[in-house]
Length: 272
Image (cartoon, rainbow, N blue to C red; front, side, top):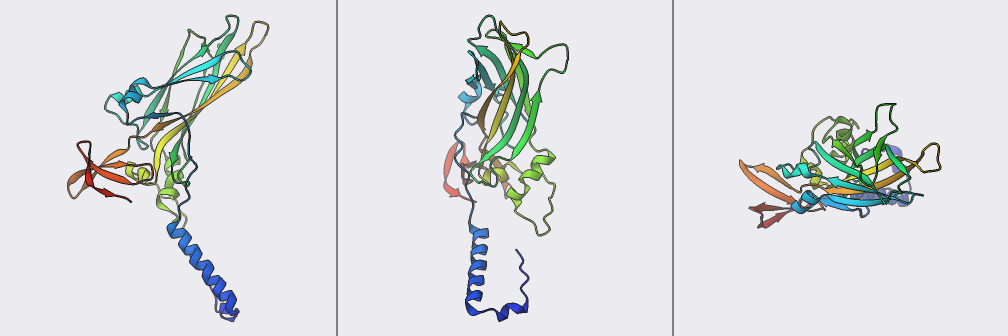
């Protein structure tokens, strides 16, 4: 921060000078030491650090407003079983299986549209909630109303999430690098540790499922939305080359880390 103070300030009364000094000191202290924390994010979670979570995925039954049936959604990250990790900076996929539960026999349901926003979840407010990717999935043919589903008929769909596109890099620039004197945005790819050190610990996937429902006495179907949020915890260990040697750092949610070796924590512990 740069302040242009002219000589006229010397004509101020003493108490005004004291007040200005106190303001400048407080401002300097605030910029250098304070970090606003995000509110706690309480959402169902798949932990990509746990093999059992990767294998089983997560299944939820969602309320459909005004309807007598529910929407079952299974989230699946099975591709991570192929020695892949769910990280912020990598491209990744989340697979969904969607069907109804308790659908009356005389009622038909189609999935008209699925809108999914993927954002990052962090303990630091300036990083929390930044959008990483967006997807819309719908039929592209005027010949059909949507994807038909029932208790037995399932829809299988995949959301491909980009790790570092231009908009995401720009969106996270100020949180990772602070404000430059010129206010310009620099285009560069950040490392996984850059995000983990800022308290980024998960991706949040927010979905809106646009349904068309046609009851026995309806000539045309009516629309209704169901929605859901789920967190996917990122893989929290990265390999860092230090003086020609590989150091494995396991990060906590607050951005601190421990150096580990063969899945055992060493005696030393560091914090950024």
